[in-house]
Length: 228
Ligand code: CA
Image (cartoon, rainbow, N blue to C red; front, side, top):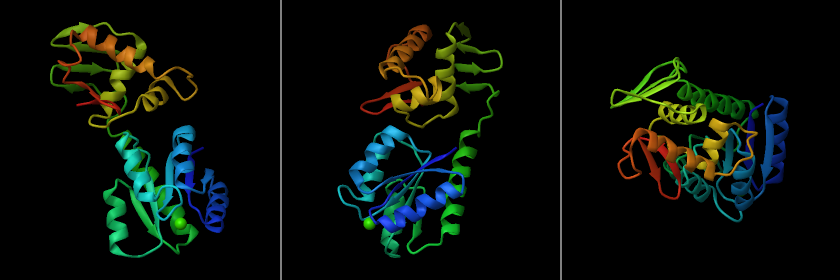
């Protein structure tokens, strides 16, 4: 079941949306201010965020900027009160995926949610799971569960393989350590984020690259990792 977080301070709108999310097969979570909203993004890891702009605590623009700044790619639909072009443009510039202008119909909102989730899924499966990925001198072959670098086979553990494969399938996307734990280790894994660093270090060692030499897996200071 997909989880949708609604950050909205007007209780009537929030409750109405929560009710309709549940009625449409989603799990709805509500936050009534910006700070609680950010906290719930981190704790609940929703699949999508509905984000009001004028909020107590922290406004929608700042929330959007903050999440994208830390590498969080959760799709965001902004709920704008004014139909001003500025609101819309700003909303999208801050890294939102879509917006909807109040007042809106529930059916329109549900259609937008489904469209955004579909877009994200299509992006994720752009590279089919079995496809061999070649990045310069690095080859990742998921069918044979094999990595080679500069023509030499590299012996990786299963987890190391999954990690480098996941990053390679999502080239250019920065993932936080928390996100990598979720995506590679699985939602239920209760490990420390340091685990991710340790695995990255092992992969680099096996490739014979120091952090500075590694043009493939890049450490993004204060954020996480991405495959260049
Ligand atoms: Ca508001």
